[in-house]
Image (cartoon, rainbow over all chains, first blue to last red; front, side, top):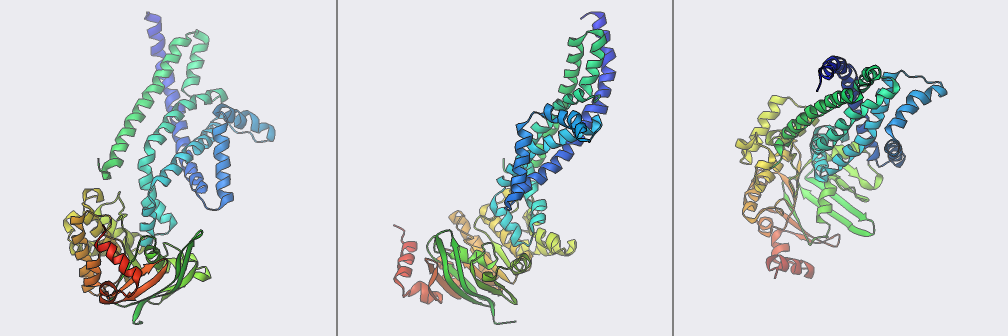
Length: 222
Length: 251
């Protein structure tokens, strides 16, 4: 590696880190938390015995999973203004990613809730719990254990998917790399640095996942 | 306070085309033990599960103490909740909460639902665990216990909500044979202490020793009822005789 490449990498580390800390990471964190809340609501709607409620949830999941995330982003940022709703880049990105996580994670949460044996609901009822209490105290803690691996997948995908926000002018990691690469034509080097940053974040998340799984497995016979 | 803690009239229940209960009546005097026996599919578990509305009968009334629910009149959630609060239930497959310690399994109902003070609830729960012989297991998780111990925690959990009536749904059927005795012993103790109990079981010896009345169910009706001596030793009905014969001599 020649001197100028080393210098370029060194000078790009700061701006790309800024893209991570101010763009990718908060975008991921906010969208994931909001997306999980939405997903829980959608999962419970989907499990509802009232058919219009479950039909709405089913339709939502179908649309989110059946259309590209990039198209969803463009509809929100470039499409909605023609209907009179103009949303800034950042909130547009948060909205798109939240809706996307909400769709995918709802199916994970629904499956995890179903995986808790029927007898747990019944036992909770016999000690007097109503539906929300049963859900909060008995069902969701057990569903959480089952859903950590697939939800970790969703989170790790989201970290990388936030790079799509570069297309709607959000200054996150990848956009920073593009901005630095443009004038210098050092595409390979700068995109490799960006890739390394994404990978590093995902490694940390994978580590956190296994710690969390160990914690949640403590009440299960090995 | 009436003399009969539990009074059940005209229970009917269908699952699709399958008419599992065809008018079951049942009276359980306060402080007595009633054992339900019968072949699989006879409706005995459905009767038991109707008493706390885990199964909603199509028709019939269940009265426990001063709480009465007429299932034919489409009871609302509040009525069902009130009925459920009258009884504690022990399941065939214990259904302990696996993510909670033994102690917290027992305290969950009193703390979270009844919102009673923690110090009092914890002391009572430890006393209940001591009573079923498991005080030293309080901080363990259910998976660390044997099947018999799990079932005894299930009994303590049911007692903790201070029910008037205890329901047992085949509490020993899923246990290894050598663990059955410790669970039946706890149930015998409860009976001796004056608990009102309804027990679905295949343990004929237990029924003979502990029951005040035995009901033999077959095809969704009570085919025969009486004292253990009447039903178990001198059954009048041929189907009761055949069932008991199969239990004693499966081959």
